[in-house]
Length: 402
Ligand SMILES: Nc1ncnc2c1ncn2[C@@H]1O[C@H](COP(=O)(O)OP(=O)(O)OP(=O)(O)O)[C@@H](O)[C@H]1O
Ligand SMILES: [Mg+2]
Image (cartoon, rainbow, N blue to C red):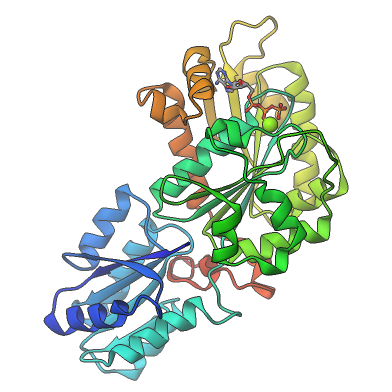
């Protein structure tokens, strides 16, 4: 079952018992509560080095004037999609309005009734118009074998760990995808189920049709055979993604290199696109075409994240990094060296790079890619249908990005 995580930084006994009582009923709030010592300053220090959870409950102890500045500092370190409920002793309508305007989900005056807190949380997570809206991250390669699927899998795993977040990985390379092998899992045919019945997607449905890797990564591999042709209908995929956005913080798509309408459409609507390329001429040419396509179709979005992979592999005609960036018109977000030993070990074991070699140079790049993705605001256009938490949530409004 997918669970959202909540971190509570509380100092007073009133706040402690309020939060404990509200989250005690696991049927009502299916959330994992972690209580942590301290307040805003401690939260800020913590999320400076690790991903913030889906929901933060914080007891504010600073006077109102300082509180807003402290919140702003906190906003800078939290990932997109973190919601904040504040508890405090100041009973002041002006302060309440100020906080809500800045994207705080709710402010409860202590002592408060646990029912109020439950209501505030339910409003965030259960109202269909205000549900948690995960971000869709589409991975595509500029050429065959450049490592797009490997990076999609490793980044999905990294996102599930760094942000205490549920992540779903969809292997959309139906004929040739290898997500099941990359994680050494029995095929569970998840993609077919999801595409056949997108309106049935809920946490139980996912529990049945996805395979879990670690605590929070949910895999939907392809059929792993060529026996029958499974076609992807754009509408079914769109419906599936809408449903999955409600179930997980990140939905990572491993796209095949096919230039079909549904692939173009998915590249158009994803919150982020990661283009993986190798330092060779074919990647430069195809990568440039992809980047131009994305720039034209996604005018309101940030450019894609470019992952330059397999650098220094000793292949003939390798394009230098500077030339590569200039010709393609985009600076790589990450550069990953060729490391045949580690990558083949990981592939053979069905494990992630970090699991087979923590010191591999690719590990740092994958962390960086995860941070770039998690730090990106959710796409504003989605707010019309499923308000993205990042758009409503604290942090982007506070930073003036909401
Ligand atoms: N930096 C690297 N160093 C060495 N080997 C790598 C590196 N990155 C990926 N590989 C290896 O390259 C092979 C192809 O990777 P992968 O399947 O992820 O590429 P792809 O772009 O998804 O390919 P396809 O076009 O078939 O979908 C795999 O065996 C993988 O382990
Ligand atoms: Mg692939």
